[in-house]
Image 1 (tube, rainbow, N blue to C red):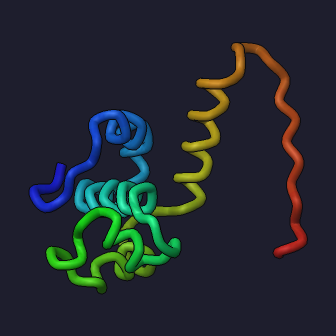
Image 2 (cartoon, helix red, strand yellow; image 1 turned 180 degrees about the vertical axis):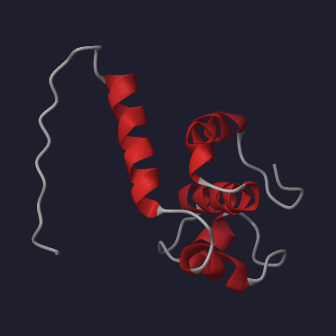
Length: 106
């Protein structure tokens, strides 16, 4: 993983399942930010993620913002990958899944 970030092996195993949604550098940033999001005890902010991952003195604050604003990854593709992962892990093969979509935000 990153020399300046520690991602628990169990979390990394889950994150590896969506690695294809990212370039290698972007995946490293994503994994560190997810680790920080889970580990942080304060507000769910970029600063909170960096604090939770113990990266506030190692990474520039801008690195996290660049990840969200300009890095090469697509949140829609990540969402589809995660939904496929959840369905494959939690539903028996051939099970019917009903999905309700709320479009009030659009």
